[in-house]
Image 1: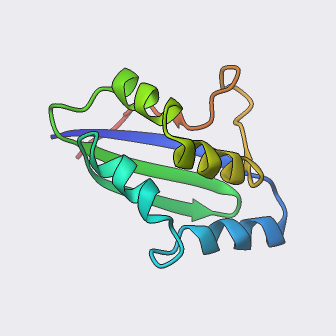
Image 2 (image 1 turned 90 degrees about the vertical axis):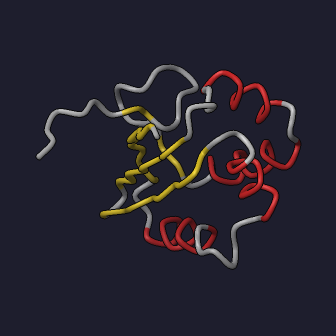
Length: 111
């Protein structure tokens, strides 16, 4: 198992934050999106929020590959529709690369 952690901001607007939370409740997340996550070797994904800052923990099996996931997402119209919708709420971190949403975090401590 591999574990990756990412950060991203939301636009600092209470209505947009509430809408983002709404779309991430299990009953509101599109089934096609869940499937697109699971078929690539992602075994667990959790998103946490404080204020407008998001933190995502992603656990994968050994078959997971970031490039393969990106290629599959690029060819999936439903994923592209979801990403367009999510971009209405999201705001890149100031140090994110161009067109980068979730920024991978560096692990600096473990007990």
